[in-house]
Length: 215
Image 1 (tube, rainbow, N blue to C red):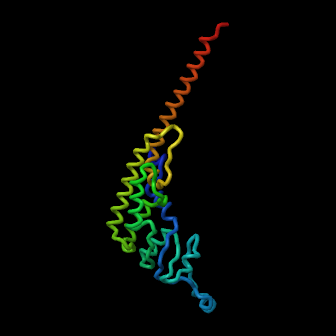
Image 2 (cartoon, rainbow, N blue to C red; image 1 turned 120 degrees about the horizontal axis):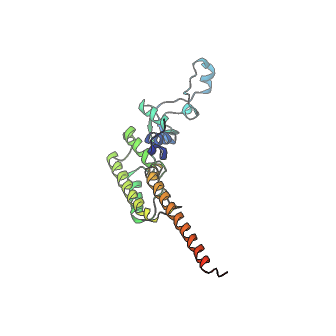
Image 3 (cartoon, one colour; image 1 turned 90 degrees about the vertical axis):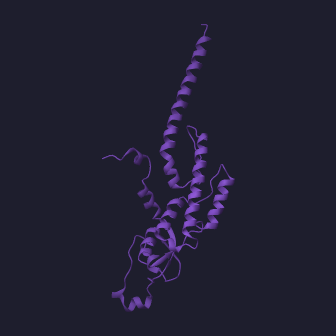
């Protein structure tokens, strides 16, 4: 069975979240998984490991010492109260205020945010709200403000769209994913118009050559 047209042209929300959850994030473990060498030698039969595709960091955690794991593991440990998640540096009230001011001041450019900023913020707000130093409602409000400002700038920028190019520097995966069906459709129509104009121009040129042929 073929996918619906809108899913053929874009990622589904679940696919985007899957991609984002495989990105690294810093945590503070509340458990220790690192095994002492002498303990391993004495109790080899009791040696245990947490198994993943890349298990070095996971099996070398020390309680209260920061380490980096992929997001889905961090969320699993968080659910089991075995870690707290360290919020990214850009996900604070002060940092978001700076991005908002940049967006307002630079009407033709987007601030440099991570490619996954919208999805990551949403996941952390829902799954680890107590791990933020700033109130989550204030962070949510600023994320929403930032998104609306950027959406407005994108719509204004569409007037510069042509049949071959659109500048999308610093837009996140989710932002591009939302725009893609609309932009692709418009660019296809612009290509058709451009091709028709080229063909018409060539025909006019050939007709002019015929008019001056006195042989």
